[in-house]
Image 1 (cartoon, each protein chain N blue to C red):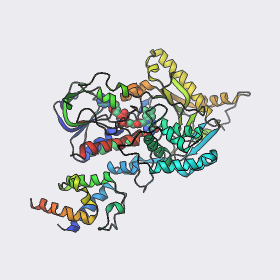
Image 2 (image 1 turned 90 degrees about the horizontal axis):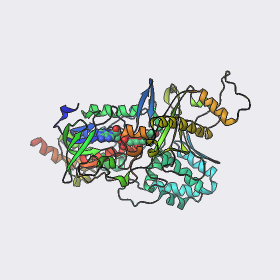
Image 3 (image 1 turned 30 degrees about the horizontal axis):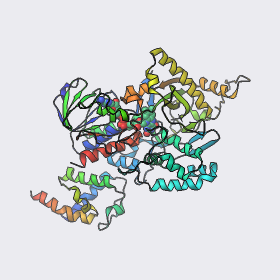
Image 4 (image 1 turned 180 degrees about the vertical axis):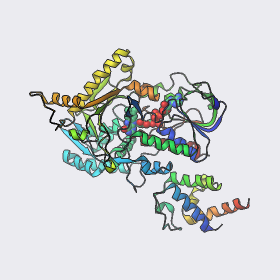
Length: 86
Length: 493
Ligand SMILES: Cc1cc2nc3c(=O)[nH]c(=O)nc-3n(C[C@H](O)[C@H](O)[C@H](O)COP(=O)(O)OP(=O)(O)OC[C@H]3O[C@@H](n4cnc5c(N)ncnc54)[C@H](O)[C@@H]3O)c2cc1C
């Protein structure tokens, strides 16, 4: 698993919860909220889908870590790796 | 019999399969909660439903779905609902209104889903008020009506800060009250903002096949997600132990347990199910406002009679009184709706014409009538409301050759003759009908005057959604179900 894989996983989830958004040129270093029309309800869904599809838990205090694709990758990669080796 | 459920345990029980309960249940099923939705009636949809009499489908409720948002719009309630429930907008088959108006003697304001029309109408009819109106609109736009901690303010007082002509203040209040105020005469300004945006800035739409389309979309999504549903299954009692709901008893005696309960049936209605509450619990917060509605099936499309508006909000004086009437019905003000007058795609036309007229009504007065008096009162008020509606509609236009107007018949009498001649069928529902179909006390369509925005109750695992949580109408109810499920069941988990 690489950071790119994690970014793709997050993008796939966003495509599922917000099919009306254009995702083709998302800049990974820029905050998602600045590029997409996502609100707190949508972020809750990203977290819920991570749990449902991948068994990854994101505690509420860590929601800010999901701000951009890059920060998602930094934050989530260790969780995916821990999950894989468990 | 629901006995096969006896002893079952759920993560969450949702009481009521109306718009809000269905939306809440979908959210929970989506994230693998074991959820059961129970509904006392045999049909879903609650306050917004439909029935058939003599093979004819009557759509009860849906005049207009408020909060229309075009494809690609951002951050609007409808878009949030579609995302949160993972519905495709095509499933709702929404068509926009043709155009609506607010009419009082001497004044008429047209509006549509294009807010610029409304603004130009205000500028034309109330030239002295337009600057104040524009400032009011700016204030409304920048107001955060969804914050849970807003101080209550009188909407009328705020409107008067911007507008000096009470005729305009009242004209704004008529649609806002009729389409969502649970309070008599005034309402909280944040509620006004929600409604002003929903009605004027977003606008009206309708699925060609009416409210069934929305209910069907919700039910099939819920089914797809594996949610369980039990119809003809009312909740009789919520057994409370030390501030916690420990089990639930259904009408037939079946008992189940659930970690959490979301109730969409209303504030007082929910309290009264709880074993630790008196039978009249919540009586200081029950709604007083109810309505009657006449439904007239026409042999022609209303537009062919010259009736082209989608909705007409009317009031017969500059003073607007929105409260429980002393008489059975208050026909001074009301709402006329033509469900035919939407811009249905592909030239689709509803097979029959419909004219619906809604007015305020007094539940207690209707409840006190004997069967015969009730039937007579229905006939009498049906006639009265038709006449009143004709006062606010253009003179019906008839081109048929066989229609010959008797000479010397006064204008109004002639309009009545035409309407009678083109009436195919009629029905009327009263506050008692509303209570019968929804369980809402006093036929109060918009529920309790004081909303419970947090959704919390005196029991730590029982929450409210829908009408008494604060968001009204079809769109509002769905949003309420979603946000309460998120806040109290998903977010915490
Ligand atoms: C005549 C009329 C016209 C309307 N027109 C419009 C319109 O044009 N546009 C619009 O947006 N809104 C309209 N509304 C308002 C809209 O219908 C409501 O705001 C909305 O449907 C409320 O949904 P809800 O889920 O909160 O409540 P409800 O729809 O009342 O759902 C509650 C459900 O709980 C069930 N229930 C009650 N007690 C129990 C029990 N003990 N056990 C199990 N189940 C129980 C009821 O049967 C009901 O199905 C109209 C309403 C009426 C009555």
